[in-house]
Length: 151
Image (cartoon, rainbow, N blue to C red; front, side, top):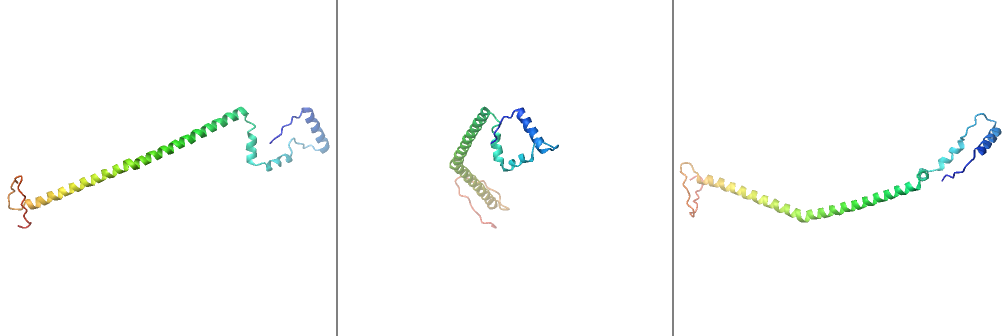
């Protein structure tokens, strides 16, 4: 921490004259090299902590309350998002996934039936239409006559 002490102009002039008369040096400066040696012992955290005195207490309190409010809202929002994601994920697994699997099974069954119908139609075409025989309409209720290929 920095301790401030008020020095009057008369005391400063007295110290200034006394220093000049003792040194006898014309290259006198208000700043000495010894003042900068103390700064090396001070860490960055100490300097940042000392900066808080620059900001008035009222403003510091307002900034601190704003930061705590922002932190609180952020935690609440993150908790809400996490819980919502959990609810949505579990709902999807329990409700939508079985539905999607059943729809996929139904589509596979429809595709299988379609393929079976195409194969049956192709078989009927091969069996029913032999060269040289006219096609006869089939009566309902009569069993279909199957003729082996090549006859």
